[in-house]
Length: 246
Image (cartoon, rainbow, N blue to C red; front, side, top):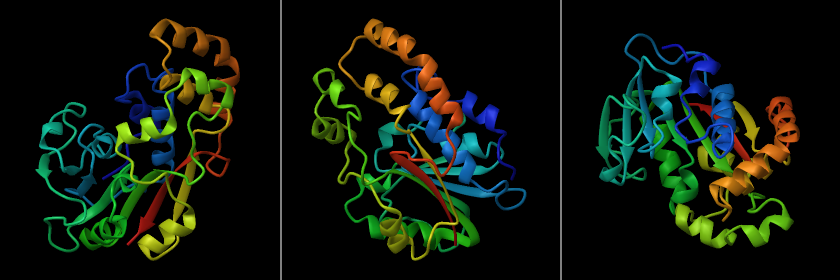
């Protein structure tokens, strides 16, 4: 199955206000697209999206694939974009209810940092991937912080409060830590949310009302737009997308 064209993929950004509040999510989608294989499997390719109850990114990335979404919360069933999954399974990433080697690709987009036994989740993802199958991951880096800009602290909730509301059990990962979890160095990687575009991320999750956020976005748009357009996969960023080949 072929990967969706970049433009079509980004146009399906499920986050509201994709060019302002949702710019950080657009950045993540672009990084994921950069590391994802051009095609996975053949006709009838199967993809497992772990923890994708709200996003449905796997289906947006490979729109013609047979996508299975697994999430611990059944209430998330149907909350992703229309047609996000062929089927939904309520289950645990640490104990996947699938036989070995049945998926052409497995995705863990912003999932590992929520799982205490992350090594079990990584092992399970590799187990259910077919030989030469892809495992795609996105995660914050160990130096992720919020707000990125110190002058925003009085306008933003404390970092601990934000991470607790997101259900994080750790800040993020270094490449070395992920290499240990998956038993090999990633085949490809691409960073996102760089020191310039971090300002939009700070504003998006600040206590500012919609009007205040719109003003902040408008005033900084020329600089942030350049930061977004000029960003390259190996440039500094607070989060990263990775690809492994089983």
